[in-house]
Image (cartoon, rainbow, N blue to C red; front, side):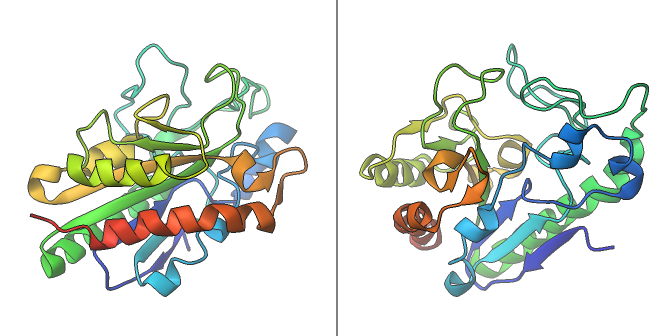
Length: 258
């Protein structure tokens, strides 16, 4: 069973896309409400937005299955990464807007979903980071995400366009982060560093700058590259955003490790 797509690159960077998956097993889908079937909280078109990655020769991993099956950016220990804030769980039961994903009385087998969908993705991340580090002496992980510009249940007002997260400075070298933050601040897009989005499980779990592993999340407001009302990709907007994204990826590849 194909649980993720993967491309092996030669550069010291792995790009993870844990919420792009659109597949949903029938035994789960048949028990979902229309909101669950529509997968409305997907990180829409992130793989298309980053279509330049193959030419940059970086490693890429992306989920095949929906985040509603299992959220690959949550830990299996159930730790709330945003204490006091409303967040979705490892196996979400509601949309970001608080609407139920499942028909009444459906029971989720969380342990089975962890074994079947969660572990293989994380095993691959771990193995690829180890391979890259062994070859280059260091490795970097870019966790690529997007979300609607307005999600009242999660935050007030409009989300900044580009949101860097480093676990409040714990998951990546600060000089590298400053360089990335400067690129975004010099762009036309509104921005935040460790604001509402500080990085999820992937960023915080794998980031270990003292051991030459830098992990950073970028949460992109979907209004910057798509029509949120029709849920359609907007190539014109995407082409305006891609140069900034390319600069960020180029910096992750080339920034020296001391």
